[in-house]
Length: 351
Image (cartoon, rainbow, N blue to C red; front, side, top):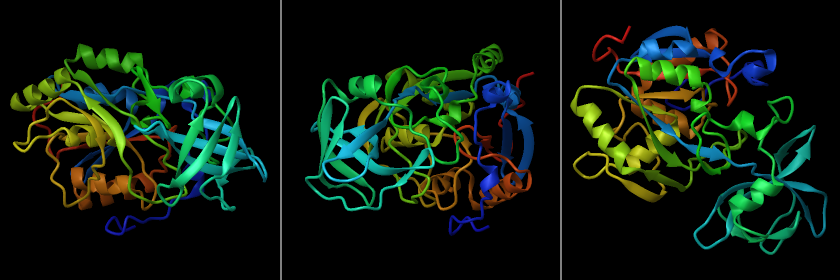
């Protein structure tokens, strides 16, 4: 495995095909790989409160997942599935065209071009122009806002590594309050009420930001595109207070890192901010807002691995992924989780 080239072999049987609840378990039954520098240890997620310290701060993404997959039919051609990524300021939508296959979908490789009309329930989408190699800008003629329309007509996005469709509630984090993500900000999925309560009881703080995620098709390796975010004044203030007191700021998900780093001013302080961020974080970027990261396990060549390298360093990331593969951890939104912390704790953990 080479982190430098962001490539490694990921066996297909390490995909988490269903949530822990499907087998009678709980969300916090997943495994937790912990990295402190190049030292790696193995835990269950419910141990998280005992791995942090009183005065540490978890920053979570309170964006709620939308049912962003729609059945569509072009004027001429077979049925398609549209994955709606996000709404733009001009009212257009960013969409990905996919082809039904084996109960799931694969990227659409047929002819598509500007002007292609797609009939969806109660309206139409018309492709305007390419946005990336796989996303299109589409004019939407549907009733209501994107959130309203998808809530009434869509279903959750899923990929072929899962066995079947799951209800939208399966893709919502316990603290999700702001609808807007095409796919689940899944790093926080195991944060159950029980875990959150124990964190509070041990003096670990929790504060929200919002970043609405777009589609992240597993078949494509490309950097993230602009996404809408908001860092509230209370969260920005708390980040500064925790760091000044010697506590650690731990981002729950790469989306939180992107949001916080997009809100850092020239003096290195997190400030209230909102808008569209095109920030892409890699090994050459100094991380100024967070000390640690709780995240899922990412696919080979994923741009998120570059962010993880910026947070923890290449040797730590190489050691962690080698251990995750050796220990047969599970990938994707229903899978296991990775906690990256500084090389040594700032002070003993509570309890």
